[in-house]
Length: 320
Image 1 (cartoon, one colour):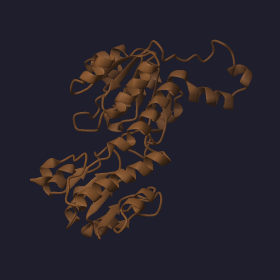
Image 2 (image 1 turned 180 degrees about the horizontal axis):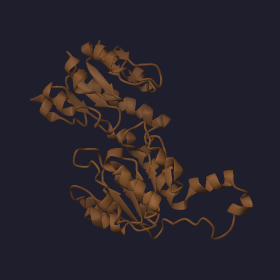
Image 3 (image 1 turned 90 degrees about the horizontal axis):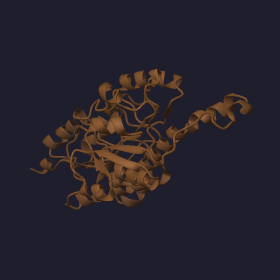
């Protein structure tokens, strides 16, 4: 029997159903283990499902750990380098979060374009006769607009497909060519061109040292005055101060954010602005997605316990 440590009180059904016969340690719902608890529990754990940070101290305390599996796609909260030095495999479960995160990005793109949240607020706070009226509070249609995708991976590709379905032209920026996207009519361009020519921009790149503040003040200054930007990737890829300045100045049309640099802290300046939509990092927060994330994490654990290599292994150098 192996000991499996789940670092946060996420829905447990997928784990208990698919890791029968093993000891699954998971905190009560909506609670994470403290660092002190993690240091104690990880000492004899065989696998960890990382819903929260797993740092170098925790990895050093692990005496028999074989695998850290991310509860989702992002692995920036795991010290992958320390795990690799310790010979511990790290894997993620990106397929489980692709559709729900793309759904949220699409919802935010639509909401910010059509000013849905702002209009809802007006109807709740002002006499309705002042809100109704053709020509008042007009938004932007999606059809005929240009959609810029920054990071044409799994999620970016779904959002691009939605854009083309809605009659949008799709530009994308990616580290490597995507011939299958080019064949569909999507156009790979440099990032500065994407920022300047897009009416809507959706971010889908991982948080790495190379992408920190990727969307800089200089790039935001290239955006069209009516253009809007959506971030369901990671808060670190956006220069937050520059974005706030652009929103307050009205030099861009708006933004919709699901992620922030210092979560769960949110800069209170956002709360004063009517041209920004805020959600609490909920891209994969659906019943179906949480269950599938647990199922896929469990499958990777079962594979490693049986002596195999997990899908989506992020650090093959750990095997040397």
